[in-house]
Image (cartoon, rainbow, N blue to C red; front, side, top):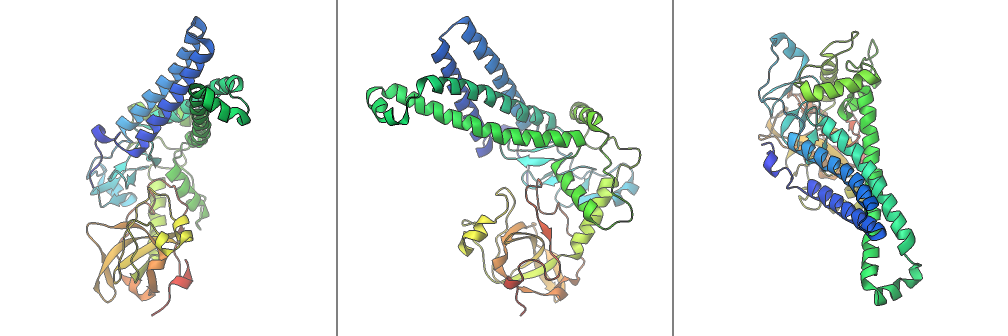
Length: 408
């Protein structure tokens, strides 16, 4: 899969919707200020303060889109070949993953210190654009608070009792239209402020602990896994030091080398990931498909609840047909996550090329045969999530949705 280029990264529904919302809220706010205060030195000062925030929002937004998360070079290998045993290998990028990097299924490249894929900037958030993204999700709530305040004052003085709206629409249509546009823009401002503000809060909590969303998930599983000694996250240097580390690595880091705690080592996290994937591989099961799923209906052909429980829309999906085989290792509601395979012998399966991996409804399967899983095919990837947006569970014997998996 080829990575997106900077020239077309804005031509996507996410950035387009984000820019339309910014334009709508900004235009409404400036109109309300001008309508209430006219063109005076005071109004110009208020507009200038607001536009300074908007300028910061747009600059950070475009920089987050343009820079991207920071791609790891294709076919990357550590300088010391002995370190390869402590690193994960990415089949798609044909190279090893440096510590803290993860493969982004949307762009098709491994990203340095990947946090998540954000559809609104149409890019993975990683080491290269993390601070730009932080600035964006911090400034947007500030702008929304400013905008909502201005619009609320205007509506307090200009919106009559709803019982009079019909008369207003008949006798003063221009004022009525302006009122509706302002109410709509204010609603957008409140909704965007709450949503982005919550995201910004989670982002700053992650910065304080120097932990990405994907790493939070890995650490959660590491602490739940049986082990002889407690797991130590190697990159938590302490709150203030973590903030400095994030900013420093943003403008001068290579996305490969990281500062670690004195009581850990550079491969503490990657070795834990390898151990977790060994557990995942041991719980992988092979299923035979007996019902196809639709490319267009996204699970609703099996009922409303199957569609409703589907994973995050940006997660990859695969389309399966009767007679095909899938190796699956995670489930979420009525969905399984796995990879298409072909049967080369009675108990031997190989991955389909090019790789087809993603979610599919569990209603597509009927057969579960433990003896099919004796092959040694490695499963490479990040547990099926490009950004940790879904909580999924490993399949174990008798695990997910037994009622749909009858023995033949």
